[in-house]
Amino acid sequence: MKYQYEFPADRSGKAGAVKPYRGEKTDFVTPVSHLSGVAELLTNSVLKATEVYNQYGQDRLGAVLISKVKGFAYADRGGTLFIEESDNNFSWSTTAAIEVAPGELSASKWVYLTKRYYRFRYVNGNLQQSEFVLYQSLGAGEIDIQLQKTKPLPVDINQSQSDFVFHHQTESTAEGAVFSVNKEKKLLVEITGTAESSHVAFWGRSISGKNVPIRGIRSDDGTPAAGTSGTEEVWLFDIAGFKEIVMEIKSISGGSLSVKGTAFS
Image (cartoon, rainbow, N blue to C red; front, side, top):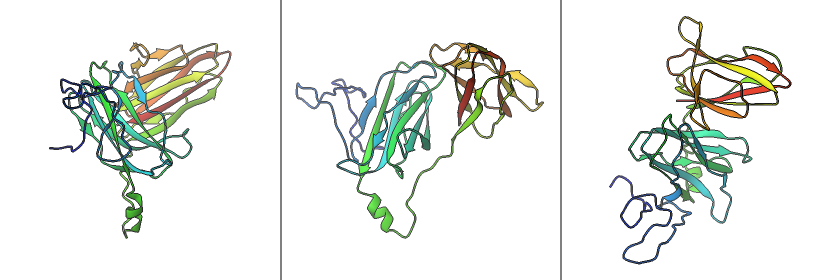
C-alpha cells in the first residue's frame, strides 16, 4: 500500500464523500482529524478553468501544536497544489508546490511548518474539472524532537513561485516593469484600481526581443484575450518559452491601475 491513510469514501467506495459511509452501519459520519494518520477532506467541489481554491488560514497554536502538514489531491484535469505559510494570516509565502497530473492521486512530502499560520491553495489548469478532491493530513509533537537533533530542522522549500509588480497605482500610460522568465511556466495576473477607463495590453517577448501578443484566460468566465479594459480581474497565462512578459497600460483616465502577478512552474 503506497499511502497508509484513511480516505473518506461513500458507500460505493468512491473517494470524496462529504459524509462517508462507515462499515456495515447505516449511519453516515463526517470524519474529523487533528493528528497524523488520517487524511481529512478539505473540498470536493469542482473548479472552473483557472479557478483557485484557497483554504482559510489555519492557526497552528491550538490545543495541539501542529508541526507538519501533508496534502493529497486528485483531479481529472491538471493543476498545482501549494502549501503556504504566514506570520500574520495576511501575507503568504509558498513553502511547497506539487504538480497534480490529470487522473492521478498526487501527494506532497511532509512539510515542517515554521510560521504560525498555514493553508492549502489549489490552482486549476486551463480546463474545467468534472472530478476533484483535496485532503490534508496534520502532524503534531515532532517539532521538539527535530530541535534536539544536531542537524537543522528539515523544511521542504520549493522555490517555484515568485510575486512581481508590473504597475503600482499608475495614473498614466506606461510599459511598466518587465518580468524576466526563468523556469516559470505559468503566470497569474491580478488587475485592480480606480480608473474610470483603461486598457492593458498583454505582451510576451521571445528571443528577438519584440513584443508579441500573449493571450490569457480570464478566471471568472474562461474568456481568452490579449488585453483587457476591465479592472478587478484575474488572468492566467502560459509563459513557457518566452524570455520576458510585459503588461503595458495603453490608455488610462480617471484614476489609477495596479497590475501584480504570481509566476510559478
